Length: 435
Image (cartoon, rainbow, N blue to C red; front, side):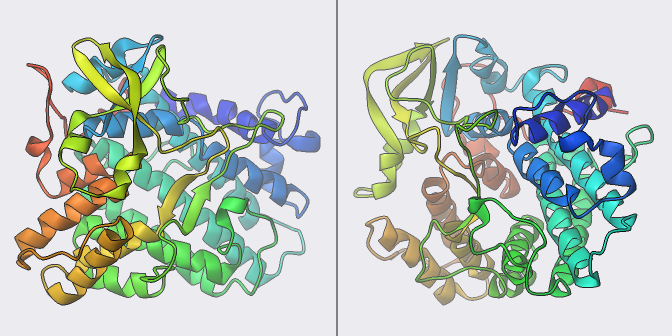
């Protein structure tokens, strides 16, 4: 349980530091307001600070989770002079329950959830002049974001389970199964959607530019529906997926990159994009797995997500000839969910019951990548193969491949380049939190 508790003050402080250069001690927020002040009685003046902290802290250690999931999905390797365990433990699948790739993502996600719980507690206790609609809108936003963080945990721990109830760090709820976790996440998202529907026409705080177009209760509802559609796809509830996508921002003729993003800056103590690495580095480098180019269809423009290195990079018997080039500056946004994924979820939800609609959606993605229309079989199995192929290239390096291959029971198809390497199905629960 220590890992959940010990990050609480650290991440709260980091979130608030991203907004100011003031020195903070003991988890204090800006202008002398303590975390207990926020949780005991949230004021209108404290709300913007608290929400900015939440959005900031959702980015903390994001790179560790993306890197580990991308390595497990055999999308790329991460070679770093500071820690060989990325090319060791993570590639061999011999995962340690006491080291950074296990504890950092777990602790950071729960710390963001802790901050959300503090604001939710303060909202429940507030004596400020928030209207009923404003309270509903704030609660809807926070619970949507909380569900997202819980989903990230569940994606990592899978059948090892996660804790849903962490509102009292000294009396944590039980570790629940994967199915129970997804059920709880959908329930939380449904409650949030109901709150957003009662949330009026505007939010009483600002979101970052990564939520542009989703910064009203109705706009945020589209994000909520999109996220719920993702979870329901994981559960195989495809009728629900289609209904939710109808209330999301999915747009077959729209910008495939449209969506919700984490944003970064070089201002003050804020965070820069942690997944950016300049080309042709040696000490720290992300190199694509050779199969990314070898398996690509001829003419697929998405192969520009990797760039040929001046010289190959090798470590521990693993070789990379191409740098990952998804993020090309320290200021690039990192997607939370975007239109391209939603169109592919639509195809997936239709592959067994309405193959014509599935193929139409597939062709939107193929054509955008410079490929001709799909001309293969339209059996569920053939369409599954095609959808997984398109998801692989459309969502490369965005933490989907490992999860996709796992949920379709195809982890054994992922390549291993060295004798003894393997792809595990789950990341262990940190030792201090496994009871």
